[in-house]
Length: 219
Image 1 (tube, rainbow, N blue to C red):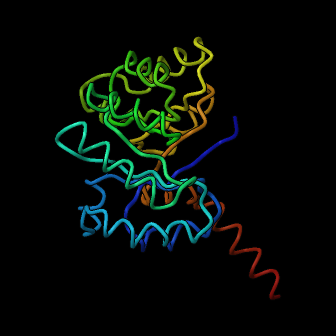
Image 2 (cartoon, rainbow, N blue to C red; image 1 turned 90 degrees about the vertical axis):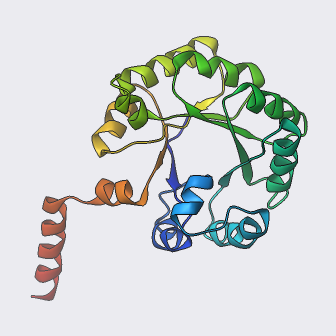
């Protein structure tokens, strides 16, 4: 499967900066990212800003459903998917409630992204329910004093062993080297912050060579 990069941001200014680059297959958001971007977590606001992301030509916009009960979360997920049919993946926590909602959304043909994955065995839930993605939090696993990279590789091997079509959407990445190490193990789907995107494209030697090319072009 081809490489897919997602921009992990709910900030329309970050979308405007990065999405025209063509690097990103899509955008991932959640209520926490909405709060950090000073965006209300409401269906009304998401209906207003979703077209701003899609206007840049991305293929997928991942929006997280919320609700204290399964029924509430299901209704939220259905409403989110209706904002742009064919382009929205509904994000759900990989919990018992999230699994129940995923079953019903899946029956409606809505792509599911399970999120907040910390344990290798949780990918089996995504495989059993036919989710499109599951997002392990590599950096936060490291914060627990564990080896996040090893955990993510174990998840990848489990899905590969099952022949599952679920994509590991690796999240909570903090350094470019984490992407390259995982890519060498066969992982190909990552969601990255605008800050990590900047680090990914920045290389002092490349910038110096580019500047020299421009000087030589003008000489």
